[in-house]
Length: 124
Image 1 (cartoon, rainbow, N blue to C red):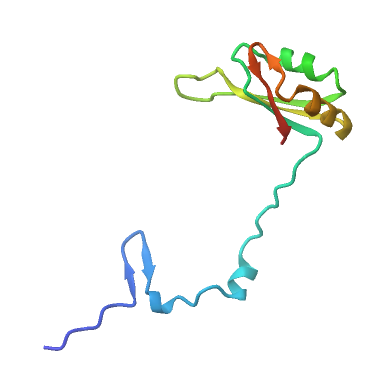
Image 2 (image 1 turned 180 degrees about the vertical axis):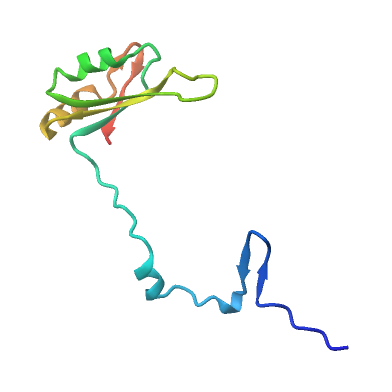
């Protein structure tokens, strides 16, 4: 009795695995059609503020950072689900109208104590 050769592609209802011999490897055609990866750029007017004490609120951050310049937005993040739902995540993003005040705030406030914790301030 003659046996049939194994298929070149193994197929399951959800997955298919190409045969190793059929893989052409990297090609310029595949790279040209691949979606472009967004380039991560540092926003020099937007700061990440981390290691916040749970009692720090939006007002505290606005008071602290507005000394350096005009703030265009403050993203203060909260847990959306789980046992900590509604509680602060411990970090925020502060966006200034210009780069110079953001740089001054970063240099001044990074590793400064706020309610017993050293702030972590970096560019977002």
